[in-house]
Length: 429
Image 1: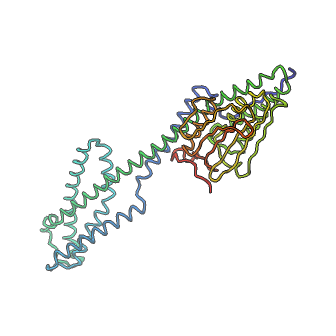
Image 2 (image 1 turned 180 degrees about the horizontal axis):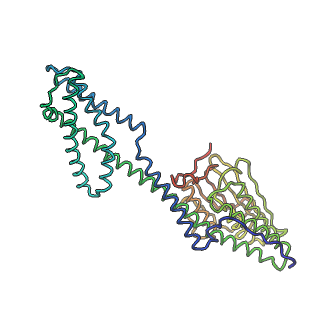
Image 3 (image 1 turned 60 degrees about the vertical axis):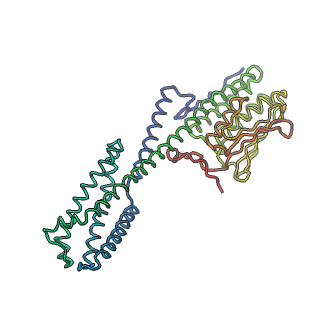
């Protein structure tokens, strides 16, 4: 067979999951999961803070509350001798005191909700705290009003002996204010917990989608390698020079799979470059009988597609089309934009025996090769029902396989968003 060519050593810092040892795969999965959970924890904790809008909302609410209570006091004491200024200051003093206590009560409510799982005990505890805290605040405000507001405003508020009377007078209003804060704290805590669950569910959905895509890829890599080695072995005794070229092309293909292993999507240009090596292997095997053509537009070349999605289609066209015609035929590959969609077409001029099949969304092939089933599943995982695989009779009598998916140049699952959301690709205008 002649002198063997230099071996193509594949140096790469990481191997795809299909070529890792179980311990390596387990360690990588654990590390990825830990990083995702860490980011998820940060996402869950971040919303608990109060920004300037929160402070403005609290201040505005208690200002409005003070205005309503002051208006009520003015109306009720219209015939009394109490100066209006004293009444207004007396009311706003209490409103802003509760404004200052709002955040501490929020934190206390969240803490009690966390440590007390029983709703009955939780609400009983919060009610007891509200009753006691209202008494304390009423006494403090009554003392402040009695000793200071009378001198500052020249009012006729009751002296030290009337503190209890003032506290009794305002206790119901203070109790109402305290219970309002506690109720708002409970609602806020439930809302934040709902947001946390949504963020965590989003993280888990993306992790599940990535795990499924990785599983499909690890199954596809050995399948592709096995079939390509079969194609090479068919020429070992017939064309040693061609075999050496095929081995070199296979080495380039394996290097490519290592480079794109972490990414579920690649550009059309990269995918077609990978496919051209596979088609070159087929041309060497079927020398003089098989012709191939790859055509794309500059706009389509920058779009993103699932990695290794065209090779199974070309393999299917060869195996179920051209080979059945004795290896004589043509395989044409085209990538183009059609409105908001990207259309990938693989057409052969083989026997045309393939059944007319249509795969969209969650549907899958009941018959057919492993590669076609994986294409359907990967399209569903990445794009949902907006992508599909359509197999029809070709114009020249063979089979046309058309993949249609949303045209996009940003990843369907961006690296920065893989622990944020599982949203689909944003179409490019």
